[in-house]
Amino acid sequence: MSLPPLHPALRATDPELAELILAEEQLQATTLRLIPSENYVSAAVLEASGTVLQNKYSEGYAGRRYYEGQQNIDQVERLAVSRAKDLFGVEHANVQPYSGSPANLAVYLAFAEPGDTVMGMALPMGGHLTHGWGVSATGRWFRGVQYGVRQDTGLIDFDEVRELALKERPKIIFCGGTALPRTIDFAAFADIARESGAVLVADIAHIAGLIAGGAHPSPAPHADVISTTTHKTLRGPRGAMLMSREEHAKAIDKAVFPGLQGGPHNQTTAAIAVALREAAQPSFRSYAHAVVANARALADELLARGFDLVSGGTDNHLILMDLTPKDVPGKIAAKALDRAGIVVNYNTVPYDPRKPFDPSGIRIGTPSLTSRGLGTDQMAAVADWIDRGVTAAGAGDEDALAAIRSEVAELMAAHPAPGLTG
Ligand code: DSN
Image 1: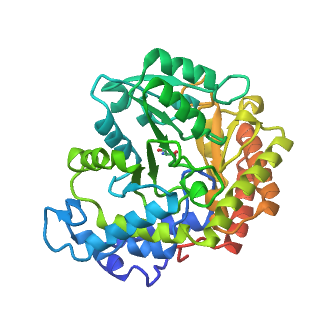
Image 2 (image 1 turned 30 degrees about the vertical axis):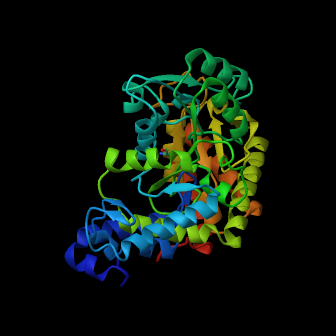
């Protein structure tokens, strides 16, 4: 394998590691990446995240640091903060959380005491570990009560959420999650939070880019706090942000630093700033709407091929498939699809009778393929590959998987991914 001139220093210092990075670039270039929480960053975001900003400690906030030499760093962070505020229409933004889980932990630190009751969607229903699920610190140090979706519709039952909130009186209610194929009704959650006296946190990690691009309603008028990662539909670096009204600014900032973290990762802050600038462009609006259009088209094609989709389809970037009717467990399907060059993750479905490490479903999404310029016309081919791949998984047909892999690689070669050299 010949290395491109792009990584000369790395190749000279650590050829073994350089080879691994090149192999990963080639894997990302040649496969159809359907994990809904992944994406491709632009070359500009990639460049910003690999800079000398890495070399600087900056504990504190712009203008209030514990180290000198912040002439440039302060400006970088101010740019990221003001772009976040403009893009999401919020009064306050903190761009320092290292990722989504620390961001959510900072919310607990800001608004609750250990042992307090918090409420979120159950992980196997589509929620997130940090929304009070038992194995997470948030479920061990706080008393997590969990809502789900209805078994018959796959949708959130707001009467049930309200009843639970009024009975349990949580300090914090989380809405949002990791496997929700439908629009989140932030206004309904805000009513319930108000009635029950809870702080409403909208965790928009999955849909931040859709919100920025106007393809999903915004929580800004409804939620007390908005938590998001920056690397999913938003197409930024691996990082996170907390946003709020001004009244909560101090509590959030104190919780992030010095409450939970030390120095911010300035190279990530810079890359977030670049991603936010990109997300403010008209082309990003088109991107966000194309992500949703592709997901809808793909869902329709899968339904036509007899797949069972949780909630019957999708409103956003994500599709959750229950493979029980196909008689192929999610993990077997995911691993076979991987061998076919289609990267998905196995996932629980609501009321899954199987275990989380060997569940009934797979979770797919369209952010990455849309970043490569695939459109609705190509979703029939994608659905066909998934269909053939799941059938081959059930039959143990490795030849069929290899055939799909070369068809996928051909389409991917015609649609180069942003940020990749190969
Ligand atoms: N790991 C993320 C996802 O895949 O949805 C959530 O943290």
